[in-house]
Length: 436
Image (cartoon, rainbow, N blue to C red):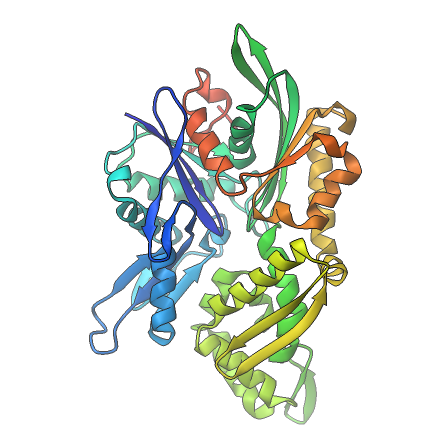
């Protein structure tokens, strides 16, 4: 028998398997573009025009492939983890069927299991699922999120499902490299959240003992950075900041249409919302109808994924270079503009301030000054953003900071955590919002 660690992320999902001893190993998937272990957290629902009742569901790279082949007839959903804790999200309609959050998640998980094949054919003895310290959204309901998770993960046939904070999973991964006692601050930067844990690792009788000291989190990370890029580069070309005429009055175009770009999941939902009818009406009333036409085309033709890729390419390049060229081309839309890293960092300054404040809260909850932190481990895709790393280089000795294993650390650590004798110190069940 084995235990399974699952890092269900806003952008990617990673699974790690661990037996009763030996190293943990990552589950791999024979995807269309080659074998991978980081499985994109997305779904596609396709109904062929000739057979609309023949619903075809795919996940991960297969979902992306289905969407690219037929974007007009494919409902593509990504970043749906973002509304796990949102009471305002009850369900969405997809091809005539209602899906609650737990339905979307269980559909995704069952597809993940199918694609993994023999690696996940045996039901694991125990599953430890990573959860953010703070869920995304205003006033997130953590109990609701965990109850939704519980329903979805039990549909995989697993009897024991436990939950652990994502940065704690990363800390267990990092602890394998420790050769001496250390107080470690782990920062996990995902798509939706930035989470921090402080843990003391000490050796006793040849074994590593871990003591949790403090934690904090904030519901901003990579997706919030994406939104700043869109809000400054793309939305103005889609009508944001423009005017329209109504009953003889000149009014500003409602900002709410562009706020949906803040979350990729909401962008997919906007296409079928009441707001879409209002947007179409603006084509006749806007001062710059050609920009509204671009907005309509972006939503009608489901260009969300192409936009996501353009934004991701810009972020990745700016992490390496002082400047980059933003290029978004889809259908009749073409937006090309150079961006300096300094400009990008100015756009994301509010999120950087929130992240830095969360680091302060983690230190305060552990009742430790920065100089008492021996090692800092930064993981997750957004840890590669220089301005994010800069927060830690200003506050801590740079020689103590390490980065790496951006995609595998959490899942691997969660799988290794399952061997802990005092597992209740690190995990919780769906009825609890704090470790047991």
